[in-house]
Image (cartoon, rainbow, N blue to C red; front, side, top):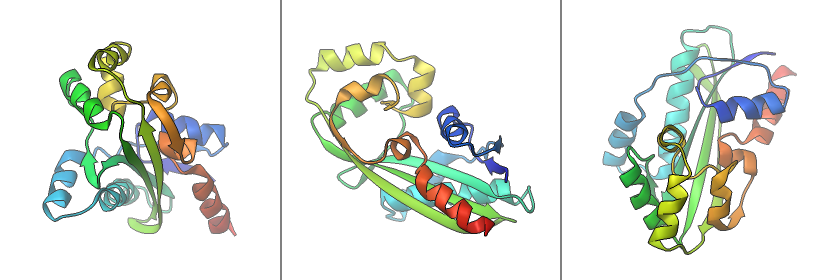
Length: 194
């Protein structure tokens, strides 16, 4: 069975490839900021925001691709139950790292599978991360080692690369932290095929 990944995330595609899940990639091109701002104005917490974004992406692509399973995904950072958005500049990235510095926070990864424009399954996974205590200079030096396009696309840390060194501990599934709770996705797809 070949699914559609409603995301242009290279990391998510690689996770699916690693688990031999064949997929076509069709970006949803959802305006994430608009959705986040609207949901935050309504008082939605980070988990609900992540779930909604995964669902919107999945349904948008699914409605144009009948009879195909479409996987939408979204990951957000929650600090004290407040959403931390992806940085729009290096200066903003440094501010985010300063907020996360020496703090426990959660990375929430949500996925949604749709068919014929309707959600048929969704799941959210939360991982706990504690960042080490760094000096301002150390945080600046860390950011200098990350390409701007990577920083703006994936956020302030990439667990699969340089970002691993930022953490005192990580409690959670590595694939989920990178963007896809793959075990749960595989279990659903197996059950769906029966």
